[in-house]
Amino acid sequence: SVPLSFFAGIGAGSKKGILFKGGASLEAMRQVKAVVMDKTGTITQGNFIVQSVVPAADIDADLLLALGASSELSSNHPIAVSITEAAKEKGLALERPSAVEEIAGKGVKATVEAGEVLCGSRRLMDMFHVSLAEYQGKQFGTEVFVAVNGKFAGYILIADTIKEDAPAAIAAIKKLGIITAMLTGDSESEAQAVAAATGIDDVRAKLLPQDKLAQLEQLRSQYGDVMFVGDGINDAPVLAGANVGAAMGSGADAAIEAADVVFMTSQVQAIPEALEISRSTNRIAW
Ligand code: ADP
Ligand code: MG
Image 1 (tube, rainbow, N blue to C red):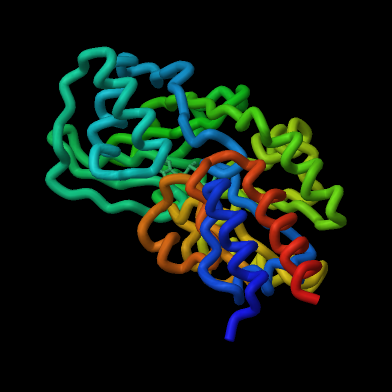
Image 2: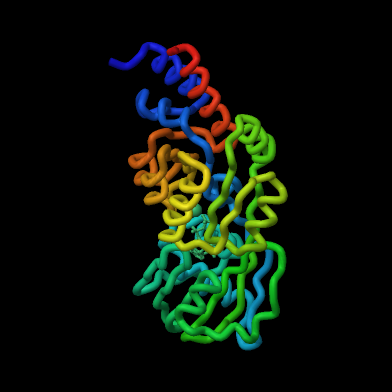
């Protein structure tokens, strides 16, 4: 039978919007040596805002945005949502693609009247051999590249915001003697900027969804038991592979299913709170 104290811990969690799936998850959390977090939606708000639309020489900005937004219509990735929102705000007419393929951790490929549109990361452009010779270089934010029929058509610069409570929450986790790490599919420069602003110890960038699980294994062999916190978009396998998997925010259904702990709040502070509850539960039990 489950020690009574686990019920106390589970009760304390639920008051703070932290749902432990049974006593085993509290027990596992006590052993955690490193907290590994996804970037988008976990450390950052996951609310990207379009900052600028930069077309290539032979296309205008509105058409570029409309093509990008049309190709993203069926994706629920936070990047896709920001691009379609920006196009709708400008009153641009969007076209539902006749075919769409989402390439996890890279972007989308869509067929519209103008032809084949690619919208996503530099890696997506590399995958389809699109030359970025015309591209001028790095600015602050995340660039979403757009190509039409294999030719670079410009990029959409988007920016996300770090959650306000992230620095204090990271400090609180570290104070418990636990290592903090972040995994992201985003660029090295974005990852380093987030690390500098929040104090996260160990940052690993440019990861595809399948790379994240390998990095988690590596962190486990380096530090010991790992807890992973993510929203489930492109990271459900990592969540399932961690000693403790935690789903944050509204979360994808797959994440809530695979998780040991569910944070009903999107506050980063829920992470140290959950760790503290697991530790005090231990004190009551023994
Ligand atoms: P994170 O690790 O930050 O949660 P993801 O693994 O979801 O990010 O995505 C990694 C990168 O792939 C993004 O930074 C973006 O460049 C690109 N990407 C993924 N999905 C899309 C999409 N639907 N549209 C455009 N770009 C995308
Ligand atoms: Mg993600």
